[in-house]
Image: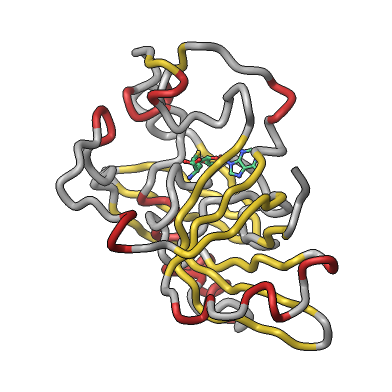
Length: 227
Ligand code: SAH
């Protein structure tokens, strides 16, 4: 198989990426077709679909191996399920699958790009295939979701320090930075085993070129600095 496109994403490291697409609506990214696949013909008709399936390589962890049983973070990291009963990144073939919303398709100066939102992919992820999402065949409203039956809800609120507020206001490149940070932190990216034990520990994450620091205090994510 060959890479057909590359992902540009605000997520520059694995930490804090949501576990599935669509959870963080303000995660905007771009799928850029490689030169060999950048002729407009390859995407003709795709603009009539609101969502696409992306098949990609878990390139960052592909050489880390896999095992038949995994501990889904969703279960607190202490119950095991079969690798094929999970969406774990550590699999015999390190391939991922995500549905994302198409914002617009841009074709100019020999470049071909699909702008998407709701991404759960790392910056630089190689894409193997793109297919339109077909609601009549792909959507199953009555389906059972096993151990991940519901959209995760951490119930954590958000608060920003004055310095963080000021920083967000003085930058104009990302008008929806506040919403983006809020949605990412609402997923509670902290490792499962630290959620109770280290309530006041400080964490840092990279979104775009920003370094964002926060801690959990009184059931709220408190963002104290953005650099
Ligand atoms: N929706 C996909 C991904 C689920 S796992 C699927 O079901 O196949 C989601 C996790 O994949 C994210 O939390 C992120 O940490 C990880 N991830 C995203 N892109 C990756 C990449 N290129 N290499 C390794 N891990 C990646």
